[in-house]
Length: 237
Image 1 (cartoon, rainbow, N blue to C red):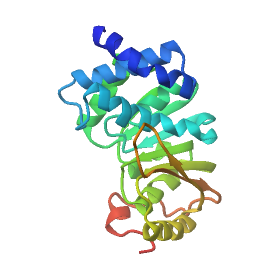
Image 2 (tube, helix red, strand yellow):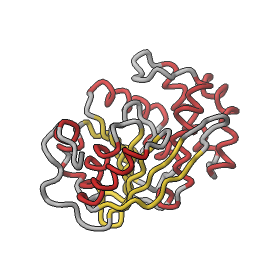
Image 3 (cartoon, rainbow, N blue to C red):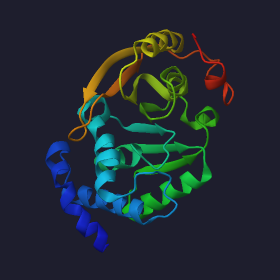
């Protein structure tokens, strides 16, 4: 707990920027403390000062999107160490956030962090997204951060979204070729590019973008395909 108290002042700027109260900032401090203390944390960035920028700020920047702030049901695909899902669950206490991760050790870590920070509206789903029938058509927003090539991410996300829901995909430098391919894949899946928003989650960062795709028609019944097919035989390539 003492470490959380030391970390807490470094998070004060999040309060004003993202409209977070003292309890939410305390929970975020406990997230960073748990990350720093856990020798099995599945990330190369666990030192608090860097983790606050690279994990917390980069996750919370999605709150700049109204569709994220208004979402009731959120899924974080390939949640890894729990980012962006855990910080957004803290920031959106009235939303239900599912953190979908296929590796057992990562699932166990996410659950330890959720318990340490007392985050009651986050739930770990230890499964591949292609093998999660309960998630189909159930989400207002699906999140993907550093997960896969964008056409693959679109194929993972589309079946999980309700009609009118949106994928938010974290990307770095823009790639015109990948974006063209993604546009063709989106059309197959019932998605449409809504916006590409350049963001600056922390000072000095460059080439960070949130790509937003909205589900405009139902995804064909042949999706999701079998595990691994999205990456082995990508659509529209």
